[in-house]
Image 1 (cartoon, rainbow, N blue to C red):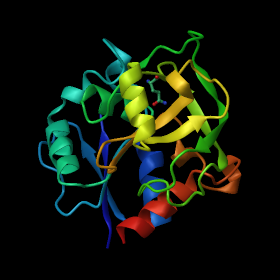
Image 2 (image 1 turned 180 degrees about the vertical axis):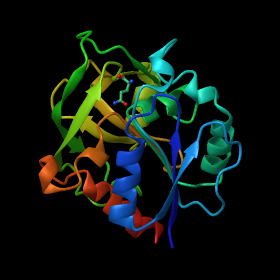
Image 3 (image 1 turned 90 degrees about the horizontal axis):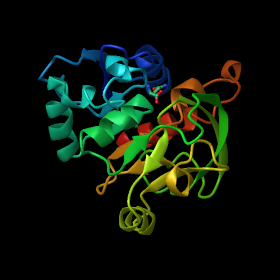
Image 4 (image 1 turned 60 degrees about the horizontal axis):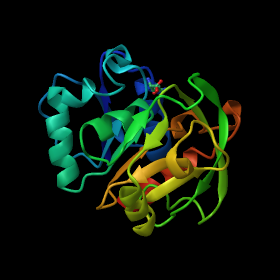
Length: 222
Ligand SMILES: NC(=O)CC[C@H](N)C(=O)O
């Protein structure tokens, strides 16, 4: 059976939603792991870093969480090829931990943005995006004040050239460079994205475009 872990930090608030999505869609044996742990459950097939307001977003969103003991284990697992999915605050934590390039700055419009946005699937060849077709337009909610992705032009060119832009906003949402909403690491086993796929897994939530990320992932991992 597939095994997954969802990491919890003080101030995480999407941890249970993420665990429910993973359990319901993939059937994985999913544990919640507190940030003070320095050892992860063995044999993990997926690590999820959920959304929220770790450490109250003080200093910079994700900066303190990135220095939690558990992140050393997450970095080691990512290095071994274990898939790591970071959503929203999770994306911020992954950039702060150096697992993904760039930074998430304050939204260009200063305000918190909380609404369902259109995304285009830029690369459907990754283990996280194989449930979509290339160029497909999907709808997934965002809820953040620091979603404005920044990287220097050389890094952005490299990300685009290597197919590491997984998702792009269909229209400007937060000032993100080149409307980037989600990026992959070099090896393709780490994805960070600001939109919340775990909040769009059944009709009751307004759609199921997020569900297909997890469905694609289970097929890739199984
Ligand atoms: N939903 C979230 O994960 C919020 C992320 C972060 N605290 C922000 O507002 O930018």
